[in-house]
Length: 503
Image 1 (cartoon, rainbow, N blue to C red):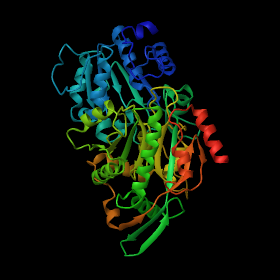
Image 2 (cartoon, rainbow, N blue to C red; image 1 turned 120 degrees about the vertical axis):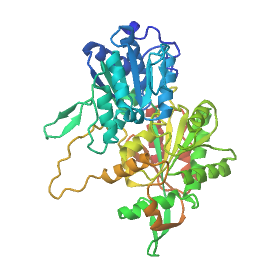
Image 3 (cartoon, helix red, strand yellow; image 1 turned 135 degrees about the vertical axis):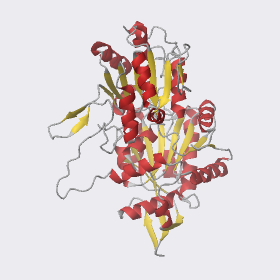
Image 4 (cartoon, rainbow, N blue to C red; image 1 turned 45 degrees about the vertical axis):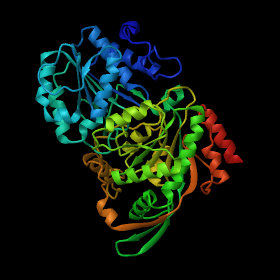
C-alpha cells in the first residue's frame, strides 16, 4: 500500500522534509494514510500542527484515491488566493495538475481538478455542486474552520460539496472561539452534555516537537513603562504586565506598538540581534514582523531599515504584488519581512525563524496561526524565536503551545459565570479578517494618545517554563538570551536556559 500510495512521488517531495526523510512519508502522515485506507470513510478530519506537513499527507492520499479510481477529480478549497496557488504548485510536484485560475465552465482535460477559495465557493456553490455530481470527486478542505467564518460560506460549502464522493478536512490550529458549526465535522457529546469536534487523526505540536518535525519555540517577552493620554485628558503611566483594567491593558499595549515610542525600536533591534545569532547556524534564516495595520507596517519597515541598514520586504494584502513579494522573500536570503496578516496562516516561508508579534489581535486562533509561521523545520536542531509584549493573554497562549483544543459547539452558561474570555477577541479577529488591513480599534485609538514608551527585557518562555530576570536592552543579561545558538535540540535549549537561570 505504501509503495502504491506514493508510487510516483518525486524523491524531492516533500521538498522540505527534514534530514533525509524526503522520499518517505513522515510517521504521522503514514499513520493517518493507513487509518484512512483501512476505514475508507467518506469524511475524514485530520488535525495536524502547523509545519507538520498536512499538504503532503493530503496530496499523497489524493494520489492514492486517483490511482485506485476511487475518485476521478480533486477540488482543493483554501482560505486565500495565495494558498490556492501554493496548493496547485505542490500538487504539480507529484503529478496532480490543479487549475488555480478556474472560475466556470468545463475544465480542460489537462487538469485533474481545481484549487479554489472559500470565498469563491461562497459566490458560486451550484457550479461546484454540479462538478461533484458529474464526476466522482475528492474535496480537500484546507483550514476547514474557515467554513464557519460566515453563515454563507458554511452553507455554500454544504451545498457545493454534499454530493462529493470523499471529503478530507484539514486544520492546523485550535478550531474556533465561537460556536458556529463547521460543515462535514463530526461533533460528539461528552459526559458534561457539551458537543466537541471529533478528529479522525490528530498530530499535535507536542508530538511533532518530540518527533523533530517542528522547531521548538523560544518566546522572548518585553515589558516597559508606557505613558498615554486618555480622551478625558488624563495622563496615565503603567508598566506592561502589571495588573490593570482591560481598557488600560489595551491602551498600554497600543502605546508599546506605537512606532514613535522607544519600545518598538528596542524590540526590533533585539530581534535583529537574535536573527544574526540564528543565521550563524541557519545562514538564510529570515525574520517576520506581524503588524496591526498598513501604517504601522510601513513605519516598522522604516525602523528596520534604520536599524539594519537594509530594506525590509513589505507585504500588504491589498497590494496586487503581495503574493509575489512573499514568494520572492521565501526564495532569497534577505533578513526581514513586515506583513499585515498575510502570513498569519498557511503561507509557507520555511526560512522564517524569528518573529515579532506587533499586533493587538488577542485570539488563541490567530496567535497559534502566527506562531505556526516559524515552526516549520528543515533540518534537525533549528529553533524559532518569537518576541512578544508582556501581555497576560499572549503569555498564556505561549505557555499553552502544546495544549490541544477541540472546537466546542455548546457553551452552557451557569449562573454568575464570567463571560466567555475569548468572545470579545473573537469579534476582533472577525473584524480583522473582514477589513482590508484597516485597524479595528479606530474608536479606541481616538480615545487615547500614546505619549512615550520604553522597553525592558522581561523573561523567556520555553516549554511551559519561564526563565530570566528583567534587564535593560543592550545589557549582558539580555545578551545572554539573545545569544542562544540557533541550532540546538529541544532538551539542549532547556538545559541551557536552566543553567543561565541558576547563574
